[in-house]
Picture 1: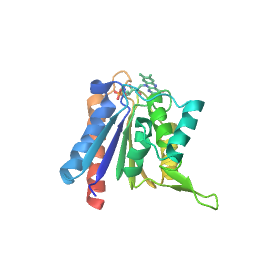
Picture 2: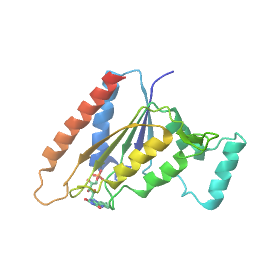
Picture 3: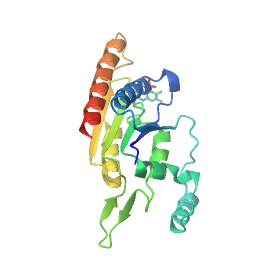
Picture 4: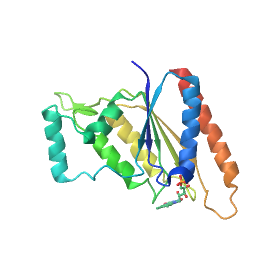
Length: 200
Ligand SMILES: Cc1cc2nc3c(=O)[nH]c(=O)nc-3n(C[C@H](O)[C@H](O)[C@H](O)COP(=O)(O)O)c2cc1C
C-alpha cells in the first residue's frame, strides 16, 4: 500500500502564514526522500466542517453503526489510514485555532479511529506511526504548549505514540529577528523530516 502522509493545515492566514511555510519545508524534505509517498492536504482554513452538535454526534453514531459513509467521516478515515500526520497551526490564545479542534472531534470517531476492547480498554486504530506538530507564536510559549500537550494525548488515544513538536517563537516581538528565527526553525523542521523519512 502506498505510504500516506496527511497534512492537517490549520494555518488560518493561508499563504502568508509562517507556520505553513515551516510545514512546507517539512513536506519538501520528506517527499524528496520518499518520492513514492502520497500527501493529502486537508485545508481547514475555509472552516467547512460543522461544529459537532448533539444531533450530529447521534447522526455520526448511526452512520458508523450502519456502515454508511459521509464526507463528515472523512477526517476519521484520513487519520485512520495515514502513515504520518503533520499538523500545522499557529499558536492562538494559548492553543490553536478552533477549526483544528472541530477537525479533531470529527477525527475522533468511535469505531474508526479508536475502539474499546471487551474489557473496556481503549485502543487506537490509526495506522500512523508519527505525529508532527508545527506551530509559531508571537511571544514565548514557555511551559504553556497546551496545544501540543493535547495533541500528544490525542495521538495516544488514536494509537500514535511517537509525537514531535517544532516551534518558532517570539515572532511578533518588536525588534525580533524574524528571518533568523524562522530560518532556524526551518532547519530543525527539515532535519526532523529527514530523520523520520530515513527511519521508516
Ligand atoms: C487570533 C490570534 C491569537 C493569538 N494568540 C497568541 C497567543 O496566545 N500567544 C502568542 O504568543 N501569540 C499569539 N498570537 C500571535 C501568533 O501566534 C503569531 O503571529 C503566529 O506566528 C501566527 O502564525 P502564522 O504566521 O502562521 O499565521 C495570536 C495571533 C492571532 C491572530
